[in-house]
Length: 566
Image (tube, rainbow, N blue to C red; front, side):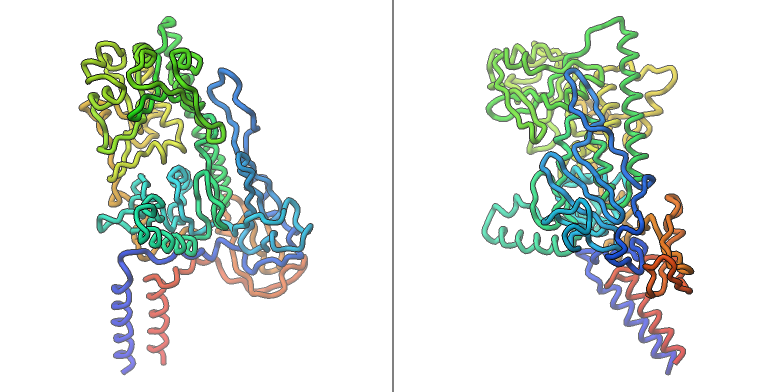
C-alpha cells in the first residue's frame, strides 16, 4: 500500500509538471544567496561597509568634450556609496535611485536624518535586482555583457540578441513569449488601449525594476538615457550604471577597461595606417537619415567621433548650413543634425563630396537596395547617383543592418551601444582598409573578439552580395543560456559580507569567493559585536522558483519520502 501511494503521488506530480503553462514562463524569484540572512537591524545600518573600494564602480572624471576631441571617458551618471546602500544619479534628468543591499534596512523608510544622502521621495530598490523588465533595447547589450539575462523577466518586442529573442519570440515554439507591452499597439483601438493597460500593470507587478529610456516616472522605473552621452566610450561606461543595480561593479570595471583598451588599440592602428599613406586625404563621410521631405546630415557628437576615430572626415555643421541646411537637434537627448530639402542644389552639392555614406533611414520592407538608397536621397536610381556621388561609384554605401532580429529590429540599437570597440572595427575596415593589411595580425586578433569574427559586426555594405552585404539574423533557438521557459532560475549574486555564525560578526568576503563564504545563521541576536550564534546552515543552492517544475519535484520528492517512511 505504501509503495502504491508513493507511485500514485509521483504519477500526479508528472501530470502537474506537464500541465505547467507553455505560453509564459513562471515568475522569477530571488536566489537565497543574494541576501544577508538573517538581516541586520536599522540600528546597525552603519556598522558594516557592504561596498568597500573593491566592490565599487570606478567612474572616470566627468568633463565636457573639448572641440576636436574624439573620445572622452565621461559618464552622465554618478554613484555614491554608503555602508549598506548606494545612491545612483542620472545627471541629465537629476533622477536619483537608492539601492540597498538585500538583508539590510531600506534607508528611505528610516527616520529622517538617520541615513546620509537620502531625501524624501527617492525611489528605492532592494539589490541585486532579480526580476527586471526591459522596455528599451539599449539596456540589452549591457545585461548580456554582464551575464544577467537570467534576471530578465520581460523584454522589449524589438529585442535582437539570440537570448532576448528566446524571451520575446511569440511566433515559434522556441520563444518564451515574455514581452513587455508595446505602447504603439495601444494607440490603435480602445480595446488595444485597455489590453495595454492590463498588460502594463502585470509587467510592473511581476518586476522589481523596469529599465526605460528617457521617460518614466512610475515607482519601479529606471531611466537609461545612454544614447545621450556624447562619446562612444561614454556610452560604454554605462555598463557600470547597470552593474550597480546588480552588485556587479567588479565585472563592469573589468569589462569597460577591456573595451576601452580595444577601442584605443584600433584607433592607434588607424592613425598608424593613415600616417603610412603619405597624408592621403581622409574619406569624407555623410551619415544621413531621410524622409519624404529631404535629408538630414547626422552630426550627433558620438557619430562624429566614430567617423574620426575610424580615419574618416565627417561633414561639419558650418559646411552643411552654408549649403542651405537647417540646423536642429536637442542637447538633452544628445542629437544634432542639419536638414536639406530633397532636390535642393545644396543637397546635391554636399553629396557630391561624399566618399562614403552611412544611411540610417527607416525602410518598412527591410534592407534596402542601392536603388532604394539613391532614390531616398533624391536621385532617379543607382546609375544617376553614381554619376555624381563618389560613394555610389565606389560602392561605399553602408547601413547598420549587419545584425537583425527575425522581425527586422537592428542590433545597432542594442549590442552596438555597449560595444563601441566592435563598432569602430567595422568603420575602420570600411574607411581605412589598410588596417586589414597588418603584418602583426593585430586587426584580426581584435576582430575575433566580435560576434562576426573578421566580417562586419553591425555594419552592412549595401549591394555587396557577399557576407558583408547580408545581415546576420538572430534566432531564439540559438540561445543556450535559457534552457527552459517554464522553469527559470537565476544564479546567485552573493553579498560582499557574510555572517560568521560562531561569533555573529559580519565579515568581509573575498571578491572572488563571495558565494563560498555565504551562510545562513540561526535567527538569533546577531547584530551585537560579540553575539554568539553556534550552528550555521551550510552554503546551499538557490531555492527553486515557486510554482516551477523544480519546486514541484522537490516538494513531491519530500512528500514521497515521507509516505515511504510512514
